[in-house]
Amino acid sequence: MLRSFKLWLTAAFLAQILINVSAESVPGRRIPDRISEGGTLRWRGKPFFPIGVYNVNQNPGEYRLLAENGFNMIQGMFPGDPFAFVQSLNAALAAGIAVDVPLYISEKVKANLANSLSTIKAARHHPAVLCWKILDEPEANRNASVRNEVPGTFSTLKAVFPEQAFELTLCQAETMSYWSKFCDIVQIDRYPVPDKPLTDVYDFCRKAAAAKAPWQTLIFVLQCGWTPDLKTQPSFDQARAMVYLALIGGAKGISWYSRQEIDESRHKRTWDLTTSPLWPRMKQINREVQSLAPPILLGEEVAGIKSSAPAVYVSCRSWQEKLYLLVCNPSDRPVETALSLPDGIHLESVRGTGVKGHYSTDGASIRMLLEPIDSGTLVAEIEKDPGSQFQERHPITKDHPSSRFSSSSFSTAVPVALR
Image (cartoon, rainbow, N blue to C red; front, side):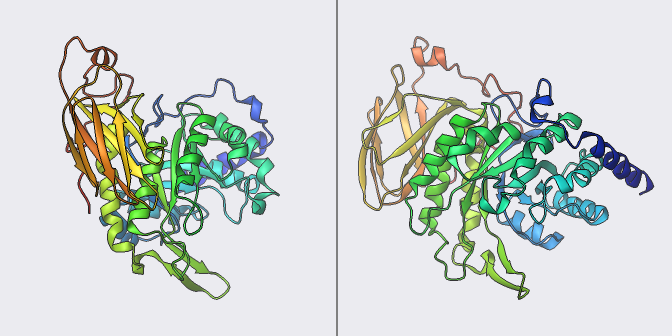
């Protein structure tokens, strides 16, 4: 305990020296140890697709409940009390939960820098820690007084701990390219329910993907509700559609908002996800997402898949001798489409999981009739042809050839059908 206290004091002193470091002063910014060149996170030595949740109770029983329902990451406890913070990390680890550590409280950034440095120095090797979050939505009006402190704070943290992963949550497309310079993990949020199109998720995801560096991890915060009138809670189909739109848009992790909401003035909980209509199905959604993690994280993107219907969104990855096509019709009407495949691909068979509508293939294309708000995955067997130009460009390998990580942590089962 004495050693930890000394570490806290040493880092606090260091903060006074580095507190005014400019954003341009970090030489040769390196990719954090837990992020691959393609933006895949690693946790406890293995590829990791985070399925997180905001505003949790920081206790062992809560962590176990969340793990049992398919969550594998939480927004953790602010590290103001070193002993309580380490205890929370230990409890999360015991439940199999990774921790996204918030370094801000009461929307403070520079004022917390000394504490942030000492915390990271003492806890950076704790196996529960996934990343360190500098601020939530620096572009938001509530952060106007501290947003300019983010660049210097990030530079200081990165200069001292270049191997660590630092995160910002961003909410505005117009300034995405600026703020993404000051984080390693780009977390974004969009909440279209009840009055905006679900496609806002895809659109914002694509803008974020274009603004960030290829190695930066993109995590999308999706809504699961936060108001007692349930207007902000999506239906099961809407929630799945938002997941698929985020994945099709390039996200390599998701998080849900919100586990609970507390009215601090009345010391009363105004929202509880676990008593809401969507809660019994959150486990199903999270399991489906986790089953898609291997092709998303380890597979190779297959470009050139086109839908004849603009209302249908699709992406494709090649992994372990199969194609995984993620398909979503977020509209409120049925849509018929034909998915055309790139030259050189001929399919032996197609199997759908989670899709409510009908599908068939002639080998060169896939025809689908999707129901309203219909999402799912098509797993296609590729006809093996040694002379195929596609297979020359996409050789069949166990994992993506550029990946630093192995697939040993993943089940090789195809996605689970969850209806």
